[in-house]
Length: 174
Image 1 (cartoon, rainbow, N blue to C red):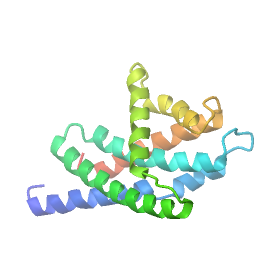
Image 2: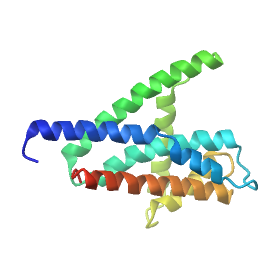
Image 3: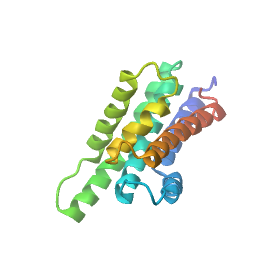
Image 4: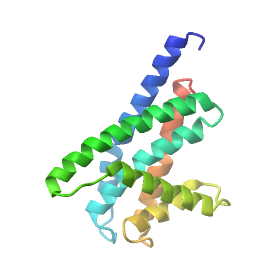
């Protein structure tokens, strides 16, 4: 990639594509459809937390997969999180109007990311982060012992991490 303009366009496109993937809801809907009737979590909370997990998993994956490329990691990460912030502002305004109170969706995303990262840091011996993410996800859904929620959170995280890696490799950014 020697042409700087082509490289910039590719990086801009990658950030946009990854943002669009993060807010796309097909895998959220699929996991919702797989939620067992025996699950203890409420479907609304489960769906809400799945979407949050997907968004932050994409952001985390950008940093993780581009760790060996600090400049790309920084630029794509910044563009991605800027898009998420703009999306969050619009969502917060709309939600605030509907329910009559202020919501800061971006702050919620940051708190969730911090919770997941802390859980991974607290268990550094775990070879697969999805093993840590699942129980944290289930806890955020209100039932840390709900195996259905644990598995769904692990699956969302693991699949998202793989899909981001595949995208970055296909785009020759990794």
